Amino acid sequence: MQTIIQRAEFPDERRILMVSDLHGHASGLQELLEKAKYTQDDILVIVGDYIEKGPQNLQTIRYVMELCEAGTVYPLMGNVDIWRLRSLLSDDPVIQRDIVDFSLLSRRWWPSSLLEEMCAECGLVLDEAFDTQKAFPLIREHFASEISFLKSLPSILETQRMIFVHGGIPHEQLDELLSVDPHSLMKWDHFMDEGLSFSKYVTVGHWPVTLYGEQYPCYNPIADRQRRIISLDGGCGVKTDGQLNLIVLPDWRSDEFEHYEWTPLPVITALDDQPETTASGFIHWGDHLVTVLKNNGETSLVLHRGREWTVPSDFLWETNGGTGCNDYTDRRLPVERGDQMYLINEYSFGCYVKKDGMTGWYMGRYQSE
Ligand SMILES: [Mn+2]
Image 1 (cartoon, rainbow, N blue to C red):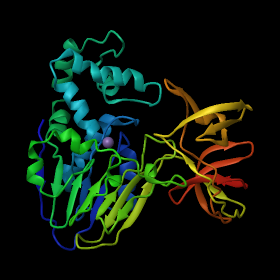
Image 2 (cartoon, protein in one colour):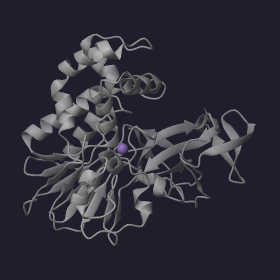
Image 3 (cartoon, rainbow, N blue to C red):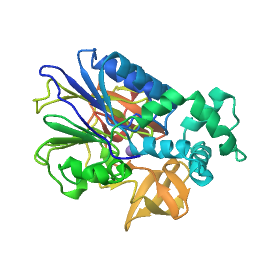
């Protein structure tokens, strides 16, 4: 598969909605579009990664296909999408096996996977003995329209004032990118840390924005207006406290936008005020290895970068490299009685919650919605 550049002109006075990294959350997208009162007068750009790490993989592809039929929608390809396609379309058993291994392994963390759903729909059994040489021709035939939809997706969309790409671009001479492997434009980790700036707004997904934070987890989109980069990925499906982000521009010439979020977490209402406390830091993925000093049951005392932390024991997981800790902050969020929040986890001493896109602690009483 090659880099595909699509060029379009956005008409004046039409809203532009942007979303990325759906990762199998069709109903999340649907709820977001309802929140934003999406109509067929709007333009919708979906910056890639439709599948895996969520419960509704086939449904998400089909929902996006329907949206494309009905309105002005620009879907782009993400790194997970191209990775899956390369497996499904390959005749090499080793490359084919990639999707099988992922799907079997992903049962440990996620409710479903694309291959799992494809097999269920075709009456195939997905297990260690799965024979890709036999099954793939069936799958390619049964899901011909979904596969050809994914195959058709461009790597880059360029408009008058904006460029959209799942991971990132090194510069704006886009035609020079026609010869690079499109996967490198889709899987560009830490894109905002490259120090690049652009003349058109470059909107990306892929890298959960919370990983750019230094003090505490925050999942709201980042808009760097000086360097002209907008980063959208709220880590939905990847992080327990992640969210789907939708940005709405009133018109393609606008610098300001509205933001909507969606998460499957339950909503609670605070019954007490709580003053904010400063975070003493942020343990996050990529720098998540800790040493367990003491397991006290519900919590554990761990050492991270020379500092002792008390973290809930259910944040800890075993990896090949040692013990990992999920994204964690000790910050207490500023809360006023009556505020609504999402409940991530409840402990005897307080609740780990999310409010206004930020994660932290709330130690007061609450009421469930
Ligand atoms: Mn991605």
